[in-house]
Amino acid sequence: MEGGPASRWEVLVGNTRTTDVLIAGAGPVGLSAAAELRRHGVRCRLVDRLPARLPFAKAVGIQPRTLELWDRMGLARTVLEAAIPISGQLVFVNGVERARFELTLPPEVPYGFAALPQYETERILEAYVADLGTEIERGTELLSFTQDPDGVTARLRTASGASEEVRAGYLIGCDGAHSVVRKALGLGFEGGAFPEEYMLADVEADWDLPHDYTVRSSHVTDDGSTDDLLVCIPLPGTGRYRMSTLVPPELSAAATDPVGAPGDGVTHGLESGRAPELSDIQAVVDRLAPRPATLSRMRWASVFRISHRIVDRYADGRVFVAGDAAHIHPPTGAQGMNTGIQDACNLGWKLALAVRGEGGPALLAGYDAERRPVGEEVVGRTVRHARQGVQADPDDPRTLMLREAQLLVGYRHSPLIGTPYGPSDAPQPGDRAPDCGGLTAAVAAYPLRLLDILRGRTGHVLIRYPGDEAADPDAGVAAATEAGLEVVTLLCREAAPTIPGYRDTGTEFARLYRPDGPTGFLVRPDGQLGARFPLSETAALVTSYFSALSASA
Image (tube, rainbow, N blue to C red; front, side, top):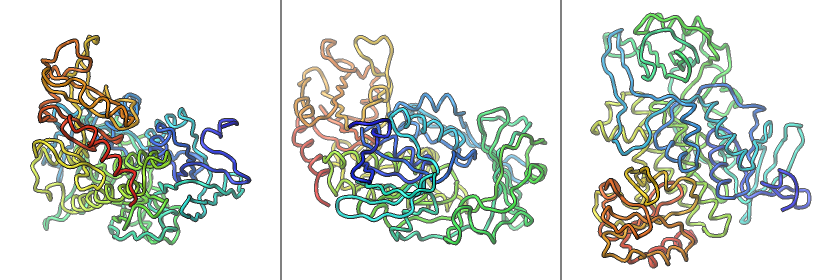
């Protein structure tokens, strides 16, 4: 392909520019979709109607599962250098500490909970995507589109005000709660709105509370209802927090529509009207803060509303929706942005196979089949927690923590994964492929984690576990190589040193994965197990698995 930088993501056919995938919306979800597509070598255009990145710390929580996915992409180190840890939550009611929750995960989980302002998340993702050859086209708005069996024709308005026609193989709507793509498709978006309005502010506080804990302080009346609330999420920087609280009547913007979406009926997001001042936030802190505190250096503030809605389907033909375009809900537990990022990662590798002609309609239909149940669960859970608290879920604390960390997201009922094999309580097809430590290599003087071995790989990976040294050490290699799979061999601790591969020296892989003799584990590009099977059946399993991905719907 000839030309300058633009030729990395598009070609010119007549007067129409063409690309593999057009992405509308360059927030964390759109950027994640572009990142996943570009690292698979797929051409894409990324457009956003805003002229610049917004300086708002809206979504700030980073879940451990998102960090695992970013590790696979080679992004985790950059994020860790910018983020701060979240160790727990302090809960105060009427000025008295009522609970202290520790965000503790099993020792084999490689990452904890983190906080990072949304604009920093976007900055990091934007730089990553730019290094792969795709720049955000700022001030460019998707006006309309049509689709046919062979692709999507979209009409854009560029930053100069000119109209442009784009022909793409696929379109992804990552354009938020007031999505143009969702509306044009006519997707259902059922749900409702919370009556409360909130103030949101990015400020510094000089109290002596531990900065790695979130703070929730409320006033509860005699009848048990909450009539005043302050939630503080720590941000990088001395004493910095994103604070949210109920809006006083004089700041109410209930009669106005959300900014940028007049009359669409979805009351979700930042609102127009007078923004809170530092004194407005200080007044709430004076009433509710568990320690006396003086606020300063307010970077921004706004009023916002919360709705809970989910689309009736995540795709229509060659057009898809992800993130807030597909599901909106309370920010409880920092689930929204992370769920959207994982939407993008799930869809990205599927589209990459489709673009290369290696995936059929059944594969793309798997996006809705896998992600819509996740969206439904997240919407339901966050609404329940917003109204009744985390205690509304009866699960044991370990399960609750793993779910909040999004480590329990799975697709066991997906039509795209293999049949169960081995112990029923072991990781099965559709489950997250757990990380583990204690892996060694003959020429390495330091132990590795499984994430270290998988980092940077873009396709499916076959993890071979041949078992003891009496087993065939080459079982499954030829079949996997012929199918174009990347192969990782994990040997038991007792394996002969002359057999190439990594050794489960700490026996952590065997403990977590529970192989049943010589076993194969097929790990998808999104870090979920696609199949688990006897290693002797590699050829048949790989053939049937990829035949399903390339099948008609």
